[in-house]
Image (tube, rainbow, N blue to C red; front, side, top):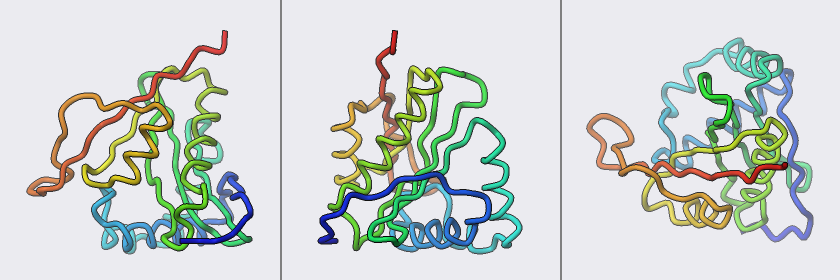
Length: 175
């Protein structure tokens, strides 16, 4: 557990920071392969241009919000918030991860709160995410933020024994 007394800085990932994004994403997949749809193998095969294009597209889409957490000046976590492509009242949370050495330092809470603030600015009514059953720290974080389970758990991948629980948060109207 990280012992810094400082609060994490949460900020957008900019297109020229694709190497930071790549490093965090690959670390997350190596650290917690059971927490994500994607795999280390598939993501590590991406080129520098692929990583740069992801962030460049996000920067102009108006529908994407990739965030990085920094603690003591070092990347400590990642989350990607994305507006639903069909329903403007729905946002999804993906790629949520906190570096093991920074867990317990409010990084996860900071990332999630910043993503939710971004959703509120866009007048989103619902925020959804999937969490692997058995990932108790993530479940606890999401429940404390007000997320509740919806639908029955489903397998993470074809042939996988791991189960994902969809969770939803209903945001209060600002009006």
